[in-house]
Length: 129
Image 1 (tube, rainbow, N blue to C red):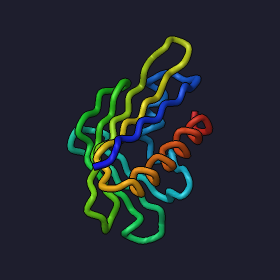
Image 2: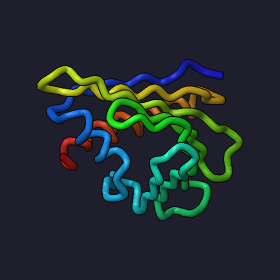
Image 3: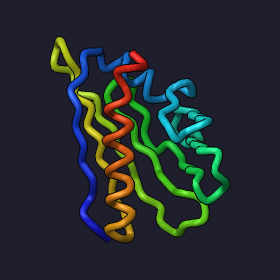
């Protein structure tokens, strides 16, 4: 296993608003073309890029604590690696710090690809607020 990914962003929104955007099926960031989130413990997470099964992602929610925490499994189709994502929403009164912790990568390539994806995703969130 490689070093986990940790990415932080400070955003001008409440934790509740950011939580809701995070679990919304309308928060589509390129290359995602469809998103299904049943944000309850045991609920399914499905992300499609429209590029076939090996580029689609599946997972299950392990923890859902609105508006402060989400935790879910993360598995790309066709790959053996199943990792875990934890998202924390830290309330700092006027802003919220979003913290993504992603662990369980089998190799550095997977770690790097997921890090780039999280940076792109977090940079895109303000457009959905």
